Length: 108
Image 1 (cartoon, rainbow, N blue to C red):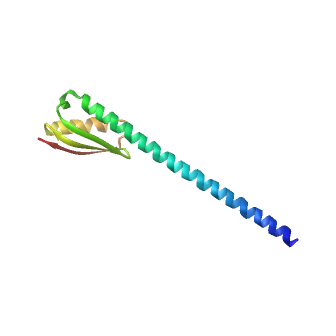
Image 2 (cartoon, rainbow, N blue to C red):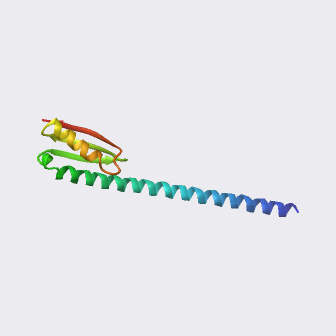
Image 3 (cartoon, one colour):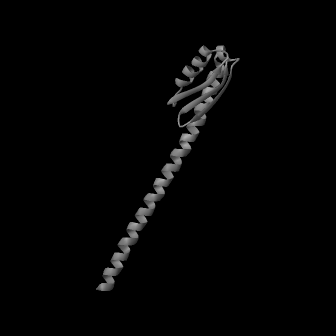
């Protein structure tokens, strides 16, 4: 009788351990997928922002660099004037996925 109880207890412990490991694996996979999705989204935002800013006729002569991390777009470089800097920031802020713009451009 005691052996039967021990065997059932061991089976229950193994079952719980298996479920716990499966949950840990699923959570890890979800975290990795989320990270990869965010990184891919940042790349798409940065590419769209650079393309959009470069296409603005009034900004074509400006030297601007675009980086994005977690939806925050960082603008750096030298702009012809303060209005150009503001126009670049406003243009990028309207893109989907952008949560904030850190405008670190310098006006000549």
